[in-house]
Length: 174
Image (cartoon, rainbow, N blue to C red):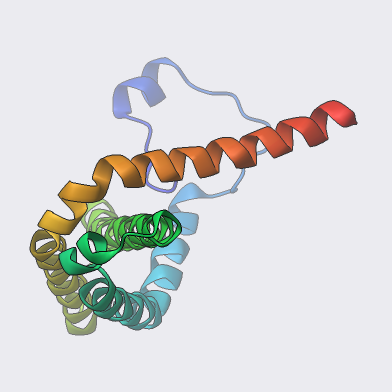
């Protein structure tokens, strides 16, 4: 990747003869990547934070223990479990995005010794605050997730299996 550097020992004793490097100058490429990442960080932060706020609102309003216990119709229970599974997966995906954006920014600036300005620190702080808010939402919904996790896992795995089976049939028919 972007941050990979060859150590001094390897570059001195195991010199790589490359005819054409891609990119031609890795240091310049790394610096350009950091600059382009920094320029887009504020917009990406606003976007992912708004998605997280929407997810937290959805999780708080839809994932309730009373909904599962009051439904006697198996079809509605199945739909609720699928909804819960989708909400949990989306939340996990968003938390990974928050975490990786903050880690990537800090790692790039640290390894390349590029200083962070106040706006970048503010964006990273916003990412971390939102990550904590997502964590607390998962903690608040822990009971709902725990009591339906087995069923959610089964529902998601059957959906994945159905998708894989249909792809397999299409590939075998070709």
